[in-house]
Each structure stands twice: as structure tokens, then as C-alpha cells.
Image (tube, rainbow over all chains, first blue to last red; front, side):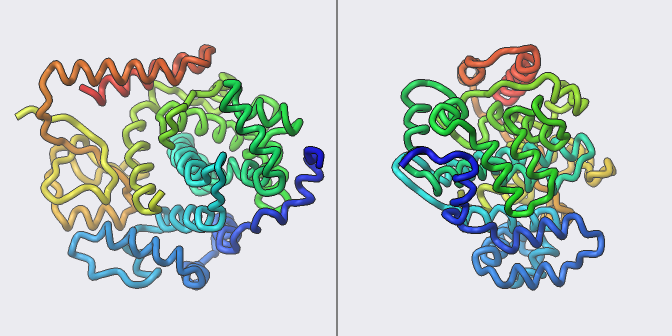
Length: 278
Length: 106
């Protein structure tokens, strides 16, 4: 069987489980000023894995002053809404997409995407973007890799092998084998899943922001590079990819000013890893 | 006794630790001043405000030789992970990460 074109790959998108309903709900909530906690709690309670992570996180954070947390609603009170949203999104995705093959470890992917999401949230706070939208985009930015792995496993194994043995970037290896890369595949998949346009574009743009006109894409690109620079993800063969000077300038980002937050970013990332168990 | 500053996730902070810098909320309001010794009530408040990490002082028992070795290791690793790349924007980031790692190791 020949390597699938991008259209053919998307035609086999059902090889990848659909995006969890709770993720759609949270993303819609982010754009809805009238959204209420009760409805979100109702959705959370349908997913035991999320409830379990929330309670574990809330009880680990309680210092004997708060009685033992035993409901999602109480977890909101202890952890605060932003952290609850982060835990919901990350848990839903890590639990749903946990494929493991000889060549591909989805846990490593999720450690990396959590790193990018944490950097994206901190950059968004610094640059006055929506932190939650940036965090969500960060978690989903490499979803194209999971689609390529699920829909064309043998071809993707070839790309990974090429990347590991020929010392070419994974992007270059994907292009060589498929003719397109995971950013293009992920952007199209996000669009099929009817995610907000800015997230679809940010996923597509995260390696080549200069080919797009997307503020969130610029931010996602910088977050990805920063995550590699701070070694979030624990990859032993880590290399920092190219950084677009235009994207940095367009965001108005000064590293001198933002570097003061590097320590905080590392600690936030470690905290989320502890809660998520990845 | 010599101390150093480290950033910790909030769930790793325990009562009795001392803040290394003032803690502010997203709006820039000061929650606690630098050198505040955190107790359980304060930590509960920080959690409920969604604070995810804090900078605290910890005792530093390393000798000068160990610190030098850690700085050199950190510098080597930064140069290694930036080795395949170039460009002005990345050079600026590399300098920022190098300074951060040097400061963290000292």
C-alpha cells in the first residue's frame, strides 16, 4: 500500500479516537462568558479518570486546613478554575491517546506537549493573550503525529527510523516519507474536529509561522522552541529547533524581560507532571 | 548558613519555607512580601488563588568546587542542545537560557 496523501490520511481519521467530548465542552466554555461551573462539573463527573486526577491534585495541594476533597466541585475551590481546566484537558487527552509502539511512546509526546502548553500559557499571560486558549493549543499542537501514527503506522515508523538514523529532523523525515508533515496533518484534523479556527491555524503554523498570519501560531511556535530550550519533556536527544525572528518581533517578545519567568515555567511544568502522573 | 533560590511547584512547598521574592497575583498585586515564612494558612490561600509555583530559599550545602562543576555541566548542556541551530533570534534565546542556567546552578 502506498503512503497516503494528506486527503487520504484525513479520510482515515477514524483510525484515531475522536476528541473527548469534555475537551470540546471546555473549549466552548473558554469562549462563553455565560458558561457556569455547574455544567462543567456535570461533564467532569461523567469521566472517572478526570475526577480521579482532580481529587488527587486537590488533596495533594491541601495542607490539613481544607477537609479531604471528595468531589469535583470542591476541587474547583481548592485548585482554582485555571488549574482545574488545565488538568481536565491534559487528563482527557493523555487518557484517550495513549498509543505505544516500538518506535513511538505517546507518554514522551504528552510530556513534550505539556511543556509547550505550559510555555504557551506563560507567554500568553506575559503578552496578554488568552492563557487557556494558548494552553489548549499547546496540548494539541502535535496531534498530527498521532493521526499519522494511527492511520499509516508503517510509514510513520519509517519516518521515525529515518529521523533517528539519518540525523534529520522529524519534520524533514515526515516530509520525505509522506510529502507533508505533522503540523499540516494536525491543522487539518483540528479543522475536521471543528476546533476554533485560531487553534487549527496555530497547530498548522507552529513549525513555519512565517508562512501563516496567525498570532496564536507565532506564540505556539515560540512556545515550542522555548520548551526545547528549557528541556521540558526530558528527551535525551533534545535539540532546539529554529526560531523565527519575525514571530518574536511580531509578538513584541523581549527575552531579557521574559527570562525572569523561566524558573516559574519549569516549576509549573513539574507540578502538572506530578498531578498527571506522566 | 548559605542559601540558594529555587522555584517549586506549589504542591511541593511545605509550611516553614521562606519566600525568595515577593509573590504577586496576575494583576500585579502583592500577595506576600519577600522573606515571608509560609504557613499552612498561607499555602491554602495561594492554592485557592491558582498560584502554581513559588520561589523559596533552601539551604545550600554545596562547596565551591561542586558549584563550579554544576555551572560547567549546565553550560555544556545548553551549548549541546543549541548546536544544530543558528540565527540572531536563537542566539538571544541561548544567551538568556545560559544566564538562567548559570544563575540556577550558583
